[in-house]
Length: 217
Image 1 (tube, rainbow, N blue to C red):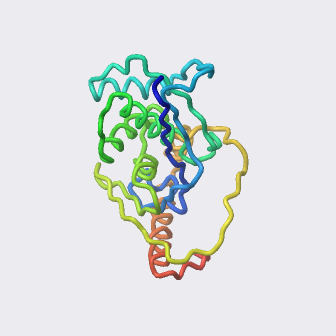
Image 2 (cartoon, rainbow, N blue to C red):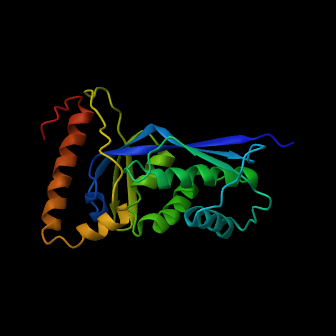
């Protein structure tokens, strides 16, 4: 009997730059200890639920981009991430499942290859992803992220001191990230608002780097 391997991908929180990152402004993002686990092959005596269209799309992407068949590939997914809560569950699912696929096919993929695959999978989930979720699940830690003219800038931020803060779960979102991005695109003053968020984000980055974050921006 083939042993079961497990693959984990963390979720994320965006400290600053939510939505403005779609308009090429910087954002601060952190990976968290909650995430998605994929076990493969599927442990015995576990009922395999029918795959969702999102999962089928992830598997299809892997086969097409690696020229593999995933023959007899089976898996089980567990998650500690609340869905529809802005914690990056779709990117985490993609990364954990892609890792399991690569292991099954005995492939060694580097971080850039995983990022590319996840970014393609995020198109299914979000329409026009900025790349921030795919970046943080793969490269992890605390990152300054910015998309500039189709390229992706990632800078690891060393947090020397950060005040305690609470992440408040305000309930399951009534809309998807894709729907929110489409809604914001219709706001007349969105460019001004996004620019202001970008200014605040850059100020936060400077403060965090110098251990002087005061939370009053």
